[in-house]
Length: 605
Image (cartoon, rainbow, N blue to C red):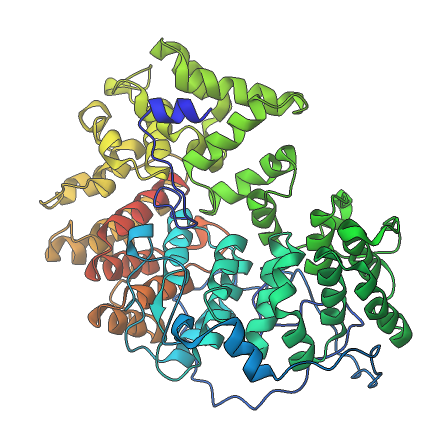
């Protein structure tokens, strides 16, 4: 199915930060991430007290700020007794070993950390400027995910995964840990893993060690912990790292070395049950020979440890257990090559809606399903409809296939299906179908929204003179216009009604236009009063956003924009917040992102 996308002019993206895809447990409040190790594996060694924390800014009308269920909650427990592990040979001097493993000329500085540059679609190295690092860390740690905006999440990923200068007041490794921790909670497991791997192992802190283990489990790759296992056990004293060392010994072809490590865990009588059995199953995969059967009876929640090791070893997780995990696990599932295609497809809608999968990646996924002999019938049918939507010679037949993918009811069309059909919609002649002309309706609305979900603003603009003024398609085209230079008349703003929640859509339309500078000052004041959108009201969040915009800090603006979107869906985003977000993005040179977010507000409300 890649050929369908290529014939439609689609670009492939090789990096985690593909521009078309501008492309976790719940939010936490501790000074470092929670341990991701299974219950019973003990507490980490106490860390030094943190400096005083500045008060985090809050968005205007933040909406739903309830904490999401964490993937790996860890109850408070008594520290483990010191029980010596099995005797091991004397280790060489750590400093000498580090120099041998990574000579000085190859070491990376903590002054600038991250996997992606501007050429890969990320923000620039000065994205956070001179913003206080502790302030940024607190914003990241307390951010409630997932975000309601696909484009907001895409932009945030581009900031978090960028190769950025470490801001003042924080350690570079700890700052990388906070970025990766937020990416994990967003479902962005590969990007999180890339961020933690941007730090040399010798520079890992206790916080980064914990997040690195999270990232390895979220990407279903226990082998990724192997370079860190010794340090993880030494620094944190957690028994889970002992199990990691056992798994790594077996994966390295030395299962005999794994046995005393597993025995030491059994002697401590902690972590017994499914968690240890999953580790033993990994050991068996590495040549331990012992067959291990995993029984989920009595297991009441899915943790990162259980999900990662089960997925890595091909153990099926019961559906009722999967429901106990946070929503970000859907992102991990959709992006993990260890997960079967059908299961990845089941999670792909969530991933597409939240910016993890681009249109190209989504089409490729269904293309692989179309070539699979054991794909479930519904997925095979979707793949066939998608082939027709992209490849049929007749535009009317392609439009019919697109409608089939969307579903019969326009109001209930999943946004992920709009993402899926974006380039198929762009291949249609402008005005195709009954939705064109004076009676422009649901076809035009959904076709324009579909194209804009993938950032295809030029293709969408072909419909500009073919849709009725005052409808949703017209409003989205006005907001997304890449060549707009004039101001919209107040009468045109007042004439917009939109479908569904017309009153809210008109307020969001006004907020987007005002933030993009598309209205005169007098019209802004007039509309703000008429629609009761108090864009002039200031609070700590708006002031922080204004300061970041004035300083040109794109990453800080992206993070604060996400803070203003902490709600379950677009209906909970206050129009005042949308105005400030769009205005700040435009001020720091992110006008394209500002236009897409403003148009998305209309498409998804």
